Image (cartoon, rainbow, N blue to C red; front, side):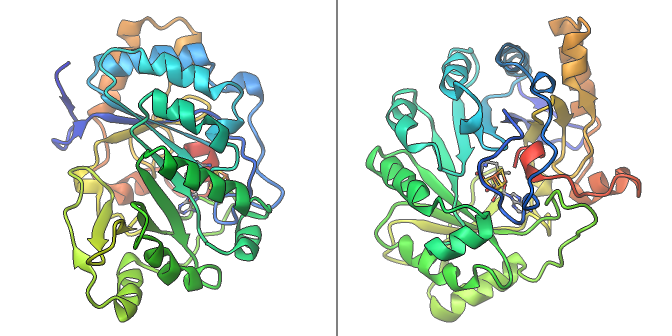
Length: 331
Ligand code: SAM
Ligand code: SF4
């Protein structure tokens, strides 16, 4: 399938699908302690709807799929969905983003299915700090998942959100982890998607500040190649097996090469992380849209993408500020 280019000349080849908005952790940067108001189950896309959507997207040139959430493994029988997506022609890569709490037991099958990589969210290497940040005492299970992924040689990226007064003490130990482990540790700027409403965090730790902090201890940190449409600026400590990345998620410096779209758990298409949903795919599918109708609606949306996250946020207007949880959006 030929590649579709958006109205800014960027290829659209990568879709991130949130398979649920539910989660078994309560990371404080993602949702309030009491959780978010979860969607009734019938409002989530069914597996059949997701599978259909992936087929239509594949016919539009989408080659890479990431399953995320919420926590994808709290969705019953996630592995069945992965098997179905794997059988869809044109989809060349499947990736997963998970908090790792329920993941370990599935690692052997993920390997067999050829999952390309797993992004594991882990903001700290300290069990007590993990408990404070995620409001759950699940560090050991996440650590076991990391070990299983490494043992099965599935490429792992550890995603750590950098937070003032929370995990700054973890930054250097996480870089140290890359010495003997072939992991990519990526430090992410905190974004305002915390589901708390009207809480727009001050960005204390920009990606430049994180880099400066790392360089105080690792003055030899060297720049290495970034992935063509990646979001991270990548580095390596000479001699280390793994790599270190910084992701300017709030500063939004990567929009110029963005090749991704998102589908939220309730089936809203987002052509930018910061937009408010531009097409109700669930409604289209449940009111009888043909595949051809869906393709046409998706194409129209791809051709109206905002140039960057600032434009997308601006288009929302003041009535719809950015404060939904990443768990609903699919981070
Ligand atoms: N539950 C899975 C997990 O945590 O990996 C998948 C969904 S989670 C929403 C995806 C990613 O979004 C995680 O790496 C998480 O750290 C990140 N995230 C959530 N809220 C964020 C925020 N306010 N700022 C930056 N990253 C955030
Ligand atoms: Fe759950 Fe992931 Fe959000 Fe943490 S970041 S609360 S694990 S969805």
